[in-house]
Length: 260
Image (cartoon, rainbow, N blue to C red):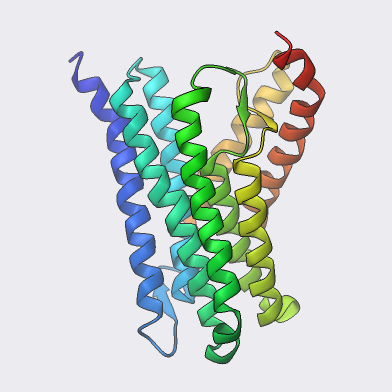
């Protein structure tokens, strides 16, 4: 039983990696269909948007991985390395691919004009993800128990996925060219934040009962909306709220934390 407990977090990691691979396959499938639409339960839209929701599932599974490892006291060196390999696929390669796939869905002519710049942004994002994960494993492990150094790859992948979903949802307002430009900016911004020295506060129990209840309720709603592919606006708002508050708090505490 002592060894079996390690299967729980590693199961979530394996499932996240496989779903990341599925997301890449779904995006790739969109290049083979001229109509570039797919139906999945209540979902209708480009293959890349379905791929984006699968990445959201990967984010939720990744959080279950970390939670179960701590709850069962089942952290291990293997689990840490395995998690990084899964993160590179699910939050590095898959989000970059879905950006490429969504750009393709906006029209062949526009895609052909934009693909080189978009590919550069994709490469930068994927490389930043790999650097971020390598730095975390080699340098930042347990260095800052209450903060992340830079944007976590999980959050970056979730941000790109939700950004893609919202851009397609409001495509009539943004426009096809606006979608591609915003995706490029999003990839560059997330890549830069992942390798930045900025501190981001972790989601942890706080002294304030109100804050703890607020976190628990919103996390529960996020799981329902994420797996149910519902209310992307709410999920995107949660990510923006976390990043705004977390990075601001990190800036306030930076001198205090790093000065120790």
